[in-house]
Length: 191
Image 1 (cartoon, one colour):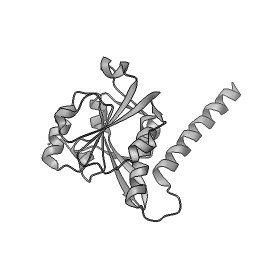
Image 2 (cartoon, one colour):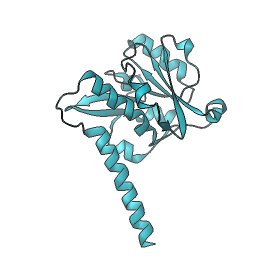
Image 3 (cartoon, rainbow, N blue to C red):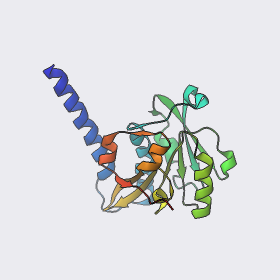
């Protein structure tokens, strides 16, 4: 019983350490370069997914052998996503990367990264995926408040993220408390 307690405690501490490293540490630089910033953001997709449970109900997506990350709008990652996920899995599935410029091109995906597309286009995209089990992520100021689930930002030269907890819960995503502890929680006012 004592061994199980210590194993559980060590496991929790290890997860917290991993999150801390992902969110707060960047080796050897005070300022992110554009490419290193997007490398960290690409890696963070996998790390975030470890602490999020997608809603059930999409049989096609649930049965797929691929975890699809879609990038909507101008691609800020270059070829970084392909490099990062060439041999990695998310949720025990091979990762497939797709790039789209028209929301009608969006098929089944688990993560949708929305580039800076403007307020009206953002509304249209969020409306399109509203009832789908798609985790929306961006890195544009104000997007979490507008309904995007997760928004990356840089603070003191470190990658951080905001979580629109209410929007995620309304969409039936389950967020591990450890992820919430290292995030800025956004609960926008209802207009």
